[in-house]
Image 1 (tube, rainbow, N blue to C red):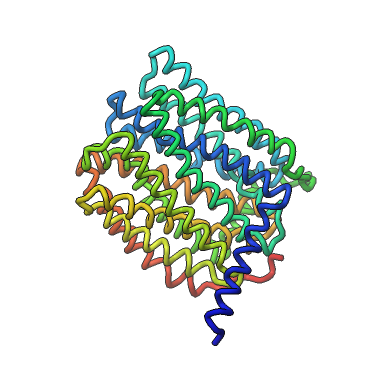
Image 2 (cartoon, helix red, strand yellow):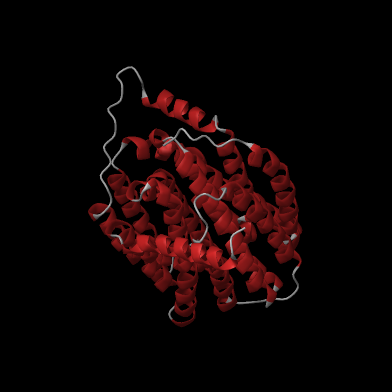
Amino acid sequence: MGSPVAKTGSLLETFRESLSLLGTRRFGTFWFASLLSSIGTWAQQVAQPWLLLTLGASPFLIGLDSFASNAPVLLLTLVGGALADRSDRRRVITVFQSIQMLCPAIIVVLLLMGIVKPWMIIALSVVVGVTDALSMPSFQSIVPSIVKREQIASGLALNSTQFNLSRILGPSIAGVLMSSVGATACFVVSAVSYVPFIGVALWILPRFTPNPPKAAAPIRPSALAGIRDVLRERHIRGALLTVLTTGVLCAPLMTFIPVLVRDVFQGGAGRFSMAVASFGVGGILGAAGLLAVSPSVDRRRISSGLALLYGVVLILSAINPWFWALPILLVFAGASMTVSNTAANSLLQATSNPRLLGQTVSLYMLALRGGMSLGALATGGAVSLFGVRHALLMSGVLAVCLQLAIAPRWLRAPIPTHHQ
């Protein structure tokens, strides 16, 4: 058995090696541009549901807005995966991110004109969802293309760190802007934040050269065959089921935090932004912890265990009677969601066939974002019928039961070593 000092030294060495990726030109520039973009996105994510509430939207419409931004993943993410495998990923990201940038700009115009309505915001969320579904597989497959294969887990953990750091900075900025200037400023920040990321996509990301397609192999059958090849692996099916269960049943916790804060704890925008930031703090802690985990550690146990914890935290959040305890619970929620999903994602990308990386990522996004869209819509209906506490409690109990059922078969599935 190794000494505690040796183990600590090994953890610190792994942590330092992971952080060294930030010093590389491609990954470092990509990371900082992504951080700025994510900060703007989270500023809008805080302002948008609160704006809908001030416009008189019901909890069902809050859930419908989340569904609108995530549901296109159900229909289009596999198309996005095919684009990632067959097209220049820089061009895919640039085109769709530019379209997406117009959406918060349009909301700014509508707010300044005083004619904004809930249906307008929901309609623009559909546009965001479509562009996300088509570009996200290309975005998610960037990290494996700019780091070495043994650095994929560290790269994804660092990428998750910036995303969760933005969960703190974005809501904090939004809280200040909403209380001083108004929600309009949050949408301005969101629109402007796309610019540096689009610039990086054009400048630093590697150009993808697709293999020429065979004359007798049309795209649709080839894509479907690729999906069948990916799903043939038991360990991949287990990872996708774990992520899907978390997306459907646990992710709605963040969608309905504004309802929980306002209706249960009688809080305002300040408490809401504090709650979202707490989730981000947990995400950073979880991602930082993953940076110290050796690539040789089985990511399935990490993902499964933290997915189960997320369900337990959801139950506790539903029955919690004190607002001061909510940010603490959300720290654990953010950590468990980040670690579980990032561990599953790194397992998928590190063990997938490089030829099918885009399709593998698209299936991951389908499980995550598609699950979130279905969960938001279903939970929105449940909140309207039973109240936010009971709806979240039912989701938490079901999540725990399903994760306990998925884990045994997933943990016993062999992991192939031929995808190198």
